[in-house]
Image (cartoon, rainbow, N blue to C red; front, side, top):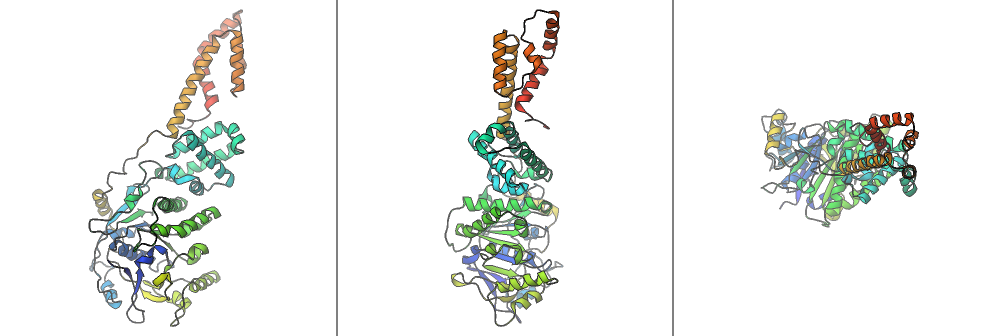
Amino acid sequence: MTETIFIGGGGESYAEPQEMTLKYANRHGLIAGATGTGKTVTLQILAESFSNAGVPVILSDVKGDLSGLAKAGSATHKLHGPFMERAAKIGFADYSYHATPVTFWDLYGEQGHPVRTTVAEMGPLLLARLLELSEAQEGILNIAFRLADEEGLALLDLKDLQALLVWVGENRAELSLRYGNVSTASIGAIQRRLLVLENQGGAQLFGEPALELSDLMRCDADGRGMVNILAADKLMAAPGLYATFLLWLLSELFEELPEVGDPDKPKLVFFFDEAHLLFDDAPKALIDKVEQVARLIRSKGVGVYFITQSPADVPEDILGQLGNRIQHALRAFTARDRKNLRLAAETYRENPRFSTEDAIREVGVGEAVTSMLQKKGVPGIVERTLIRPPSSQLGPISPSERAEFLRQSDMAGKYDQPADRRSAYEILAERAAKAAAEAEAAEDAAEIAPEPMAREYNAARRYSGARVSRSSARRVKPRDSFGSAIGEAVIKELKGTTGRRIVRGILGSLFKGR
């Protein structure tokens, strides 16, 4: 079994071939560089290499270019012409063109198999981040999740959460005594955020059948790891949804996978493209969670690689855990750029043959400054490296080719049709219907009851918080006048309407807008 994957290097003015040791590949990594310097191709060759070593991969395709992994490269391709020459220059004798086993996924279900999770699995912390809630609003969301557990209400999709929040609003007086102030303004703000999320297409993320993590950790018949490509070009229009979904996926891997210590190779490698979206304006609680996951998930055999334009986009505590680094060119047009360039250079183990800061500024497209973990996890000396060419197609495949891959996929049919089983929305709707029937039955009994019973009925309704109108109280008086007879006729005519009015008073707006 291979113990390393080839990164590049070699040839004139370049160091000896640079390789990543699979044993240390789960100690995370960084791919950084300005736009157009070759980060996407580097991600592609790493995905190929991990797959060839039998390691499944999860990556997001932000620009749509990585679908080419599913198709073998070709010497006749306009972008592949110099690849053979580069392979010879860096001493890559085993270079050849071949495809990589790929499964396409898409949160919107358009360019891949649908990806879903449930509201309960997402949890209040990540959901609050997704909805950009204030501290008070996040507190109410936590109350809602607590009540869902206590009441046995399954939170699967957004309508479950919306129905639960209505129920919380109807019972806010009692809940405020138990959990602190529950304001209608905060509930309304959360509902508006949910509406915005729904308009962004986020409703398609929540529901069943939910994604099974085992489907992301498969190998093909030849033992090559499956490369799971998440279509993210449309998803990037909602960057908060993109970052929160990938963080949820990482958190689920951390929660569900068993401890494996230091395996000979990773169980899974996770590439987080446009990583700065995860940390921009993120609350400290979320940053702490990412740091915790990054620190501990390597013991589960998972390697996490952040792809971003500058190392400064990643918090320092997390950056310090990224042992394998591939740094493409950084541009220094402003004072801030020069500072970030200097800080990036200082994070590498110096090479006496050249200035790291100058090298980061000068490397061309397809070149990088690299440092890989060596024996005992010691960072290697920084080297200038010519990155190896990809074996799969550079650039995207056609829509018809993608459709054929989807049709032949092992996952075809498993996630395509959504399911809607009995959950919080249905349970609360049943309770509402039952309460409506009981309220109408009680009103009917009160209409024909003698005056003492009517007084008891009205007193009971006042005690429960329901409103008793003057006309309702008058209906139980003896029919001793012509006016009473007229009133009785009017009451009979309005009987159904009255019942519905009382129900609305009890249940609020559970079905409002639906």
